[in-house]
Length: 181
Image 1 (cartoon, rainbow, N blue to C red):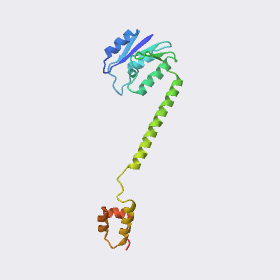
Image 2: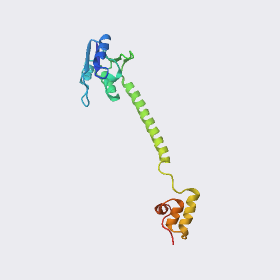
Image 3: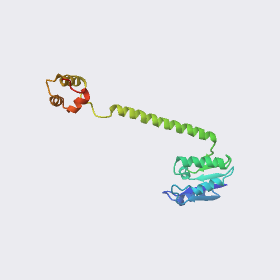
Image 4: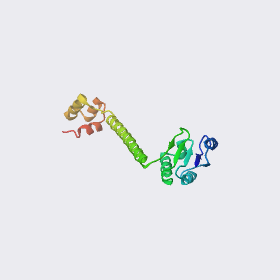
């Protein structure tokens, strides 16, 4: 038996139903307005009726769910309800997809790898950004050494040292601590 399933989206359900009829579906069901958090009840019902040798026919994979998780749930339910004998027919490619537990293991492996790659890329970018983050140091190199000498010289006031190096006295305190007398 070929069961067609459509879901309302921008192109409209009529085109999907027409394609499912042209594909020779014995039964066609669909969702008029599947809003979250409501489940895709018609999809679930169509999958529940599948037996070994049946096909669930869709015009494209995204019809099966509103996200990757829901599409994978449809695949696993199709396998479970038909004891592994039913397939999902994708009219956009003509492919018949038969789900297996081994496929789940492979997809989990790929998903874990993709997640780890994303983590590594964002972590590396974060480390690189932290290396550049923040303002440029007010005093560095020879200016830092000269400012330290002037700060502890006591022949100049703290304000004069700050003015000479274009910083505040607080900055000088932060760098060098209290002036010794």
